[in-house]
Image 1 (cartoon, rainbow, N blue to C red):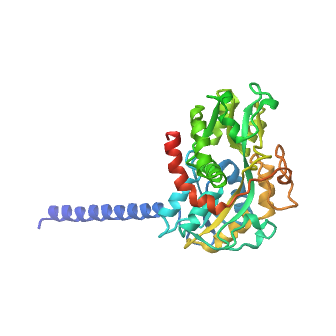
Image 2 (cartoon, rainbow, N blue to C red):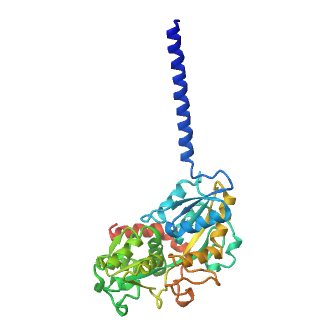
Image 3 (tube, one colour):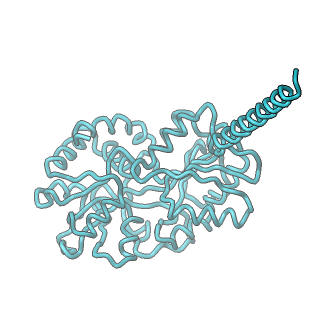
Length: 354
Protein backbone atom coordinates (compact mmCIF):
# COMPACT_ATOMS: atom_id res chain seq x y z
CA UNK A 1 0.00 0.00 0.00
CA UNK A 2 1.41 3.42 -0.92
CA UNK A 3 1.64 6.22 1.58
CA UNK A 4 -1.01 8.15 -0.37
CA UNK A 5 -3.42 5.20 -0.29
CA UNK A 6 -2.76 4.69 3.42
CA UNK A 7 -3.59 8.34 4.11
CA UNK A 8 -6.83 8.03 2.11
CA UNK A 9 -7.77 4.82 3.94
CA UNK A 10 -7.09 6.41 7.35
CA UNK A 11 -9.09 9.52 6.39
CA UNK A 12 -11.98 7.31 5.39
CA UNK A 13 -11.95 5.51 8.74
CA UNK A 14 -11.93 8.83 10.58
CA UNK A 15 -14.85 10.15 8.51
CA UNK A 16 -16.79 6.94 9.16
CA UNK A 17 -16.16 7.30 12.89
CA UNK A 18 -17.37 10.89 12.86
CA UNK A 19 -20.54 9.97 10.95
CA UNK A 20 -21.24 6.99 13.24
CA UNK A 21 -20.72 9.13 16.33
CA UNK A 22 -23.01 11.84 14.98
CA UNK A 23 -25.73 9.32 14.17
CA UNK A 24 -25.45 7.84 17.65
CA UNK A 25 -25.76 11.31 19.19
CA UNK A 26 -28.79 12.14 17.05
CA UNK A 27 -30.40 8.84 17.99
CA UNK A 28 -29.89 9.49 21.70
CA UNK A 29 -31.27 13.02 21.40
CA UNK A 30 -34.32 11.73 19.53
CA UNK A 31 -35.01 9.13 22.23
CA UNK A 32 -34.68 11.77 24.92
CA UNK A 33 -37.12 13.97 23.07
CA UNK A 34 -39.60 11.14 22.63
CA UNK A 35 -39.60 10.42 26.35
CA UNK A 36 -39.58 14.03 27.48
CA UNK A 37 -42.98 13.55 29.13
CA UNK A 38 -41.70 10.76 31.37
CA UNK A 39 -40.32 11.57 34.78
CA UNK A 40 -36.88 10.53 35.90
CA UNK A 41 -36.74 11.78 39.47
CA UNK A 42 -38.51 13.27 42.47
CA UNK A 43 -37.85 16.81 41.31
CA UNK A 44 -40.04 16.43 38.22
CA UNK A 45 -43.74 15.72 37.84
CA UNK A 46 -45.85 15.50 34.68
CA UNK A 47 -49.48 16.56 34.64
CA UNK A 48 -52.02 16.46 31.83
CA UNK A 49 -54.36 19.45 32.16
CA UNK A 50 -57.72 20.08 30.48
CA UNK A 51 -58.33 23.22 32.53
CA UNK A 52 -57.69 26.42 30.53
CA UNK A 53 -53.97 27.07 30.48
CA UNK A 54 -54.42 30.73 31.42
CA UNK A 55 -56.01 29.62 34.70
CA UNK A 56 -54.02 26.46 35.45
CA UNK A 57 -50.54 27.71 34.64
CA UNK A 58 -50.28 30.25 37.50
CA UNK A 59 -51.29 27.53 39.99
CA UNK A 60 -48.65 25.14 38.69
CA UNK A 61 -46.01 27.88 38.59
CA UNK A 62 -46.79 28.70 42.23
CA UNK A 63 -46.23 25.04 43.09
CA UNK A 64 -42.87 25.08 41.31
CA UNK A 65 -41.78 28.19 43.21
CA UNK A 66 -42.96 26.79 46.52
CA UNK A 67 -41.39 23.33 46.20
CA UNK A 68 -38.62 23.60 43.62
CA UNK A 69 -40.22 20.69 41.73
CA UNK A 70 -40.30 21.06 37.94
CA UNK A 71 -43.83 20.65 36.55
CA UNK A 72 -44.13 19.35 33.00
CA UNK A 73 -47.65 20.41 32.04
CA UNK A 74 -49.37 19.16 28.88
CA UNK A 75 -52.50 21.15 28.02
CA UNK A 76 -55.54 20.15 25.99
CA UNK A 77 -56.78 22.23 23.07
CA UNK A 78 -59.91 24.37 23.25
CA UNK A 79 -61.62 22.28 20.60
CA UNK A 80 -61.06 18.86 22.18
CA UNK A 81 -61.26 19.48 25.94
CA UNK A 82 -61.00 17.21 27.73
CA UNK A 83 -61.41 14.42 25.21
CA UNK A 84 -57.96 14.84 23.66
CA UNK A 85 -55.97 14.18 26.82
CA UNK A 86 -58.36 11.48 27.99
CA UNK A 87 -57.74 9.60 24.75
CA UNK A 88 -54.00 10.19 25.13
CA UNK A 89 -54.07 8.68 28.62
CA UNK A 90 -55.98 5.65 27.33
CA UNK A 91 -53.47 5.21 24.50
CA UNK A 92 -50.59 5.41 27.00
CA UNK A 93 -52.17 3.04 29.51
CA UNK A 94 -49.50 0.35 29.10
CA UNK A 95 -46.68 2.90 29.22
CA UNK A 96 -47.90 5.93 31.16
CA UNK A 97 -46.18 9.25 30.56
CA UNK A 98 -48.18 11.38 33.02
CA UNK A 99 -48.33 11.27 36.81
CA UNK A 100 -51.48 13.35 37.34
CA UNK A 101 -54.62 14.21 35.38
CA UNK A 102 -56.36 17.53 36.11
CA UNK A 103 -59.74 17.53 34.36
CA UNK A 104 -62.00 20.57 34.13
CA UNK A 105 -65.15 18.42 33.99
CA UNK A 106 -66.19 15.13 35.61
CA UNK A 107 -67.26 12.83 32.80
CA UNK A 108 -63.90 12.03 31.21
CA UNK A 109 -62.34 11.33 34.58
CA UNK A 110 -64.97 8.71 35.32
CA UNK A 111 -64.47 7.18 31.87
CA UNK A 112 -60.75 6.90 32.67
CA UNK A 113 -61.53 5.25 36.01
CA UNK A 114 -63.71 2.71 34.24
CA UNK A 115 -60.92 2.03 31.73
CA UNK A 116 -58.41 1.30 34.52
CA UNK A 117 -56.25 4.32 33.71
CA UNK A 118 -56.36 5.86 37.19
CA UNK A 119 -54.94 4.80 40.56
CA UNK A 120 -56.56 5.26 43.97
CA UNK A 121 -55.12 7.97 46.20
CA UNK A 122 -56.70 9.47 49.31
CA UNK A 123 -55.20 12.89 49.96
CA UNK A 124 -55.35 14.39 53.43
CA UNK A 125 -55.63 17.80 51.75
CA UNK A 126 -59.17 16.86 50.72
CA UNK A 127 -60.46 16.66 54.30
CA UNK A 128 -62.49 19.90 53.96
CA UNK A 129 -64.13 18.97 50.65
CA UNK A 130 -67.70 17.54 50.88
CA UNK A 131 -68.08 13.83 50.26
CA UNK A 132 -70.36 14.59 47.27
CA UNK A 133 -67.27 15.68 45.37
CA UNK A 134 -65.08 12.68 46.26
CA UNK A 135 -64.92 9.22 44.79
CA UNK A 136 -65.67 6.72 47.59
CA UNK A 137 -62.90 4.54 46.12
CA UNK A 138 -60.48 7.53 45.98
CA UNK A 139 -59.81 7.45 42.24
CA UNK A 140 -60.67 11.15 41.92
CA UNK A 141 -61.34 14.19 44.08
CA UNK A 142 -63.19 17.34 43.08
CA UNK A 143 -62.18 20.91 43.82
CA UNK A 144 -63.03 24.46 42.69
CA UNK A 145 -66.23 24.21 40.65
CA UNK A 146 -67.58 26.08 37.66
CA UNK A 147 -71.16 26.25 36.43
CA UNK A 148 -72.78 26.01 33.06
CA UNK A 149 -74.63 29.27 32.37
CA UNK A 150 -76.66 31.06 29.74
CA UNK A 151 -74.83 34.15 28.45
CA UNK A 152 -76.69 36.95 26.67
CA UNK A 153 -75.84 40.24 24.96
CA UNK A 154 -77.10 43.08 27.15
CA UNK A 155 -77.36 45.46 24.15
CA UNK A 156 -79.73 43.07 22.39
CA UNK A 157 -81.59 41.34 25.23
CA UNK A 158 -83.19 42.94 28.28
CA UNK A 159 -82.58 41.20 31.60
CA UNK A 160 -86.30 40.49 32.02
CA UNK A 161 -86.42 38.82 28.61
CA UNK A 162 -83.32 36.65 28.99
CA UNK A 163 -83.91 32.87 28.97
CA UNK A 164 -84.12 31.34 32.44
CA UNK A 165 -83.88 27.70 31.43
CA UNK A 166 -81.78 25.69 29.02
CA UNK A 167 -85.06 24.50 27.51
CA UNK A 168 -86.06 28.08 26.64
CA UNK A 169 -83.38 28.04 23.95
CA UNK A 170 -85.57 25.80 21.77
CA UNK A 171 -88.27 28.53 21.72
CA UNK A 172 -88.77 29.91 18.18
CA UNK A 173 -88.17 33.44 19.54
CA UNK A 174 -84.46 32.52 19.69
CA UNK A 175 -84.31 30.89 16.25
CA UNK A 176 -80.85 31.34 14.72
CA UNK A 177 -79.73 33.32 17.78
CA UNK A 178 -78.26 30.58 19.99
CA UNK A 179 -74.66 29.31 20.04
CA UNK A 180 -73.29 26.27 21.91
CA UNK A 181 -69.90 24.56 21.91
CA UNK A 182 -69.55 21.18 20.22
CA UNK A 183 -71.29 18.74 22.60
CA UNK A 184 -68.75 15.99 21.91
CA UNK A 185 -66.06 17.74 23.93
CA UNK A 186 -65.23 19.43 27.22
CA UNK A 187 -67.78 20.86 29.62
CA UNK A 188 -70.53 20.73 26.98
CA UNK A 189 -70.15 16.95 26.81
CA UNK A 190 -70.61 16.87 30.58
CA UNK A 191 -73.72 19.05 30.30
CA UNK A 192 -75.42 16.94 27.64
CA UNK A 193 -74.55 13.70 29.44
CA UNK A 194 -76.07 15.18 32.60
CA UNK A 195 -79.24 16.13 30.70
CA UNK A 196 -79.63 12.61 29.33
CA UNK A 197 -79.04 11.14 32.79
CA UNK A 198 -81.63 13.50 34.29
CA UNK A 199 -84.32 13.53 31.56
CA UNK A 200 -84.03 10.12 29.96
CA UNK A 201 -83.47 9.47 26.27
CA UNK A 202 -86.90 10.39 24.92
CA UNK A 203 -87.12 13.84 26.51
CA UNK A 204 -83.47 14.65 25.88
CA UNK A 205 -83.69 13.59 22.22
CA UNK A 206 -86.78 15.76 21.79
CA UNK A 207 -85.00 18.79 23.25
CA UNK A 208 -82.00 18.46 20.96
CA UNK A 209 -84.22 17.91 17.91
CA UNK A 210 -86.04 21.14 18.71
CA UNK A 211 -82.73 22.90 19.29
CA UNK A 212 -81.53 21.72 15.86
CA UNK A 213 -84.79 22.90 14.24
CA UNK A 214 -84.22 26.26 15.92
CA UNK A 215 -80.99 26.59 13.91
CA UNK A 216 -78.60 26.41 16.87
CA UNK A 217 -75.03 27.33 15.93
CA UNK A 218 -72.49 24.71 17.01
CA UNK A 219 -69.01 26.22 17.40
CA UNK A 220 -65.55 24.90 18.39
CA UNK A 221 -65.46 25.99 22.05
CA UNK A 222 -67.01 27.86 24.97
CA UNK A 223 -64.86 30.95 24.47
CA UNK A 224 -66.13 31.14 20.88
CA UNK A 225 -69.70 31.11 22.21
CA UNK A 226 -68.86 33.98 24.56
CA UNK A 227 -67.18 36.02 21.83
CA UNK A 228 -70.07 35.56 19.39
CA UNK A 229 -72.52 36.77 22.03
CA UNK A 230 -70.30 39.70 23.00
CA UNK A 231 -70.02 40.79 19.35
CA UNK A 232 -73.77 40.44 18.83
CA UNK A 233 -73.43 37.69 16.21
CA UNK A 234 -75.98 35.77 18.28
CA UNK A 235 -78.09 37.01 21.17
CA UNK A 236 -77.59 34.12 23.60
CA UNK A 237 -75.40 31.08 24.18
CA UNK A 238 -74.48 28.38 26.66
CA UNK A 239 -70.99 28.48 28.14
CA UNK A 240 -69.12 28.36 31.47
CA UNK A 241 -68.85 30.90 34.27
CA UNK A 242 -65.13 31.47 33.75
CA UNK A 243 -65.62 32.29 30.07
CA UNK A 244 -68.31 34.86 30.85
CA UNK A 245 -66.24 36.41 33.60
CA UNK A 246 -63.41 37.13 31.15
CA UNK A 247 -65.87 39.19 29.11
CA UNK A 248 -67.22 40.93 32.21
CA UNK A 249 -63.71 41.94 33.24
CA UNK A 250 -63.25 43.47 29.79
CA UNK A 251 -66.52 45.43 30.20
CA UNK A 252 -68.09 43.69 27.22
CA UNK A 253 -71.91 43.80 26.89
CA UNK A 254 -72.73 40.41 28.39
CA UNK A 255 -74.48 39.00 31.44
CA UNK A 256 -75.17 35.47 32.63
CA UNK A 257 -78.09 33.48 33.96
CA UNK A 258 -77.68 30.45 36.21
CA UNK A 259 -80.28 28.27 34.50
CA UNK A 260 -83.05 26.07 35.85
CA UNK A 261 -82.78 27.23 39.46
CA UNK A 262 -86.44 26.33 39.93
CA UNK A 263 -86.33 23.25 37.71
CA UNK A 264 -83.74 20.51 37.32
CA UNK A 265 -81.09 22.68 38.98
CA UNK A 266 -77.90 24.44 37.93
CA UNK A 267 -75.19 22.18 36.40
CA UNK A 268 -72.12 22.35 38.65
CA UNK A 269 -68.78 21.10 37.34
CA UNK A 270 -65.97 20.53 39.81
CA UNK A 271 -62.42 20.17 38.63
CA UNK A 272 -61.23 16.63 39.25
CA UNK A 273 -57.69 15.50 39.96
CA UNK A 274 -56.45 11.92 39.79
CA UNK A 275 -53.27 9.90 40.06
CA UNK A 276 -52.39 8.01 36.87
CA UNK A 277 -51.99 4.25 37.33
CA UNK A 278 -48.40 3.11 36.85
CA UNK A 279 -47.19 6.69 36.58
CA UNK A 280 -43.43 7.28 36.24
CA UNK A 281 -43.22 9.36 39.44
CA UNK A 282 -46.19 8.53 41.63
CA UNK A 283 -44.82 10.07 44.84
CA UNK A 284 -44.24 13.42 43.14
CA UNK A 285 -47.72 13.08 41.63
CA UNK A 286 -49.30 12.60 45.05
CA UNK A 287 -47.60 15.72 46.40
CA UNK A 288 -48.88 17.78 43.49
CA UNK A 289 -52.39 16.40 44.06
CA UNK A 290 -52.14 17.44 47.72
CA UNK A 291 -51.35 20.97 46.62
CA UNK A 292 -54.17 21.15 44.06
CA UNK A 293 -56.68 20.05 46.70
CA UNK A 294 -55.52 22.62 49.23
CA UNK A 295 -57.45 25.69 50.41
CA UNK A 296 -54.59 27.73 48.94
CA UNK A 297 -55.37 26.50 45.43
CA UNK A 298 -59.12 26.98 45.82
CA UNK A 299 -58.54 30.54 47.03
CA UNK A 300 -56.22 31.27 44.09
CA UNK A 301 -58.74 29.96 41.55
CA UNK A 302 -61.53 31.96 43.20
CA UNK A 303 -59.47 35.19 43.01
CA UNK A 304 -58.42 34.60 39.41
CA UNK A 305 -60.43 35.33 36.26
CA UNK A 306 -61.49 31.68 36.44
CA UNK A 307 -63.81 32.74 39.33
CA UNK A 308 -64.12 29.14 40.42
CA UNK A 309 -66.39 28.34 43.35
CA UNK A 310 -64.57 26.83 46.36
CA UNK A 311 -66.06 23.53 47.48
CA UNK A 312 -64.81 23.77 51.05
CA UNK A 313 -66.19 26.27 53.53
CA UNK A 314 -64.04 29.10 54.82
CA UNK A 315 -62.59 30.07 51.43
CA UNK A 316 -63.77 33.43 50.08
CA UNK A 317 -66.16 33.13 47.13
CA UNK A 318 -65.25 34.73 43.79
CA UNK A 319 -66.69 38.02 42.55
CA UNK A 320 -69.43 38.06 39.90
CA UNK A 321 -70.53 34.57 41.00
CA UNK A 322 -73.29 33.78 43.51
CA UNK A 323 -72.27 31.47 46.35
CA UNK A 324 -72.94 27.76 45.97
CA UNK A 325 -75.49 27.86 48.78
CA UNK A 326 -77.63 30.46 46.94
CA UNK A 327 -78.97 28.18 44.19
CA UNK A 328 -80.11 24.61 43.66
CA UNK A 329 -77.36 22.50 42.09
CA UNK A 330 -78.40 19.86 39.60
CA UNK A 331 -78.57 16.48 41.33
CA UNK A 332 -76.32 14.27 39.29
CA UNK A 333 -74.93 10.78 39.43
CA UNK A 334 -71.53 11.42 37.82
CA UNK A 335 -70.97 7.72 37.26
CA UNK A 336 -74.28 7.29 35.45
CA UNK A 337 -73.53 10.28 33.24
CA UNK A 338 -70.04 8.98 32.46
CA UNK A 339 -71.40 5.57 31.51
CA UNK A 340 -73.62 7.24 28.89
CA UNK A 341 -71.18 9.75 27.42
CA UNK A 342 -70.02 7.70 24.43
CA UNK A 343 -73.55 6.62 23.56
CA UNK A 344 -74.84 10.18 24.00
CA UNK A 345 -72.11 11.46 21.71
CA UNK A 346 -73.21 9.05 18.97
CA UNK A 347 -76.85 10.06 19.43
CA UNK A 348 -76.04 13.74 19.15
CA UNK A 349 -73.91 13.24 16.06
CA UNK A 350 -77.03 11.98 14.31
CA UNK A 351 -79.51 14.37 15.93
CA UNK A 352 -77.43 17.51 15.34
CA UNK A 353 -75.71 16.43 12.14
CA UNK A 354 -72.19 16.67 13.55
